[in-house]
Image 1: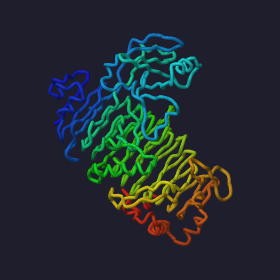
Image 2: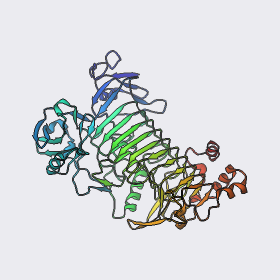
Image 3: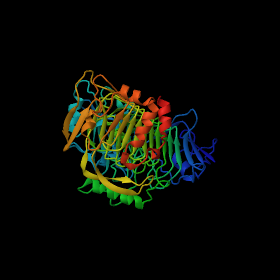
Image 4: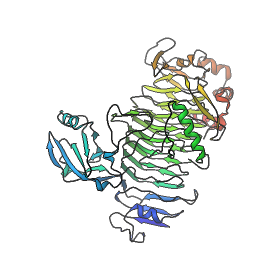
Length: 563
């Protein structure tokens, strides 16, 4: 059955037909059953959608979609009017606390594991003028000081909350807020079930924006502007997901009362994995999501985040940009895409740019394929960070154009036919014992520290700094580790396990592995590039697991596509 929703012409007492639509998406979700579609018509829907149930199978889903040719906006904010001038170009408005219900974002402090406040207090609320957000000031004094600057790059707001009202001060520059669209966040999330296990839901073609999301560490429930909440089989496609205080799209874990870290962060996360296994963390029960064709932007933590809940998923053809741009707080979990345990997942054909870090794969990247992605203008860290993974995983046919291309604190990867224009950084991690899983399973096989290396590079192009620098590269001490850094692969000469290379191209001073033969010798000796790649892929150790176990991989197909 198809239900219709129209904020302009509907009423929740209607039957939900095209002629007599509902007024809210929430009303449609309350009646939709497996196999039903909720079609959302043109307009702005200021509500949080909490789907009370999911579908039964891929063939019997509950589908939420925009009406063809219409723009349906689900919004976590409300319009604020009646602003008054205060001083120094600053305006103010009062909002009754009762309007926020049980969640006042301007009284909710951002905190959590691996969060760094930079010595400031941050709240989950945000203020928007004409669709774009302002920055939270640390104090009223900072707001006044910033407002007095000539042509500031950013404009700020500050809030005071007492028992009855929330007073917001904001610098709108030359804009009269009573003549503009000013919105403030009221809701923690926009599309998110309040309990796990709402499976087989599709969200298609919507604009989802303005969420007062909390920090989403890998050890706690990860709330996003839109999120799957420890469910199975969602399809999230062709949406615009924008302006989340922390994370945009969450494929993350459940919450439980024991979620925290111990003094040993590795021990704390291993216990999180053990509790997840008790909560049905297994193929066929969790994950298996498809995230495709979305435009995700302006989120201060991550565009896509997921701890344990993204297994067996496909993330493809999304554009993720302008992530962590205010940079008023920091911590781990900040990237265009940040995933823990993307077991047997495929990350394919995405465009990731203007973020602090492009793609961060952290713990249990096993059977994972990263293919055909374009990375550029990721200016604070690197395009790809591989942290404490034992593999195997496949990184192929990607283009890395930022100044820092790859940070590798892992083992057991195969890198084929990538274009790498930035530096590579390599380090071991002897202080943390991290798990690898039984083949095609979520069961922990064993734990071990990371020695580094055990990779194979074939058919890649490495671009240097524009001059021949001789052999080797640089070293850098960072957080108690020594990082070996180079354009090209010479940084792997010091890795704990041997790394092999074949048929790679080095230009403008990029440096090859000491053990790698020049490309002409490799080709003359073997006769065909495909035979070289298949032979060497078959002989590399990659933690003892075959490449045939990698999601979406067929070594012959990869090679034929390239050559």
